[in-house]
Length: 254
Image (cartoon, rainbow, N blue to C red):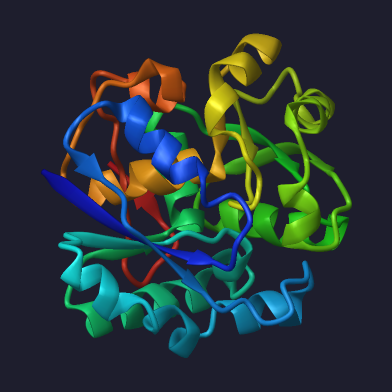
């Protein structure tokens, strides 16, 4: 059995993770602890508060007792909102507290883009434009070129959690660009697990969504590979193309 512990901000789309367990159809387990979110708004100050080390650490002991072999901070904005260096410090603190390998959804996106063999991406984010811009900056520092972006204008995680497939599909179509090799859909508050292949069929290229990437990143930390095409191209890549993030730098390399 492989167990990846998830630290998830509040309550929005956490039901995506039990669904993912079913779709993986293996001995993978994804215990989840819901952290306090504070205001839950898509603003820089609120995102930084959400990602504070003390908030994230609240669930560490419970996940350790659940048998977690690695931990993932299952938040996009609560990690990239701190900037590249701040997000590194956040995850280093989590790893020290837990005594386990740790990462976050934002770093997962950088790794996952490389996994599918891409370098140029489009971003379809439910956030306001300024927050989408922060995510784009984070990706660029990580060596991922952002060629296009679209913002949905949601003000809170609760608002994004109420979106259905039609809203997400519309945003993905709007964001897609001929130069983009893959489209990224950040925000773990969005329900996307049930229809990732539909999104990929819609635009004819890989789509990486936050909850999908979060699980994949946790499995990467445990060196666990699994074949699950119902979760999209990311889980249907038979030969890994993993490139690790430098612990204190901005380079992504073989």
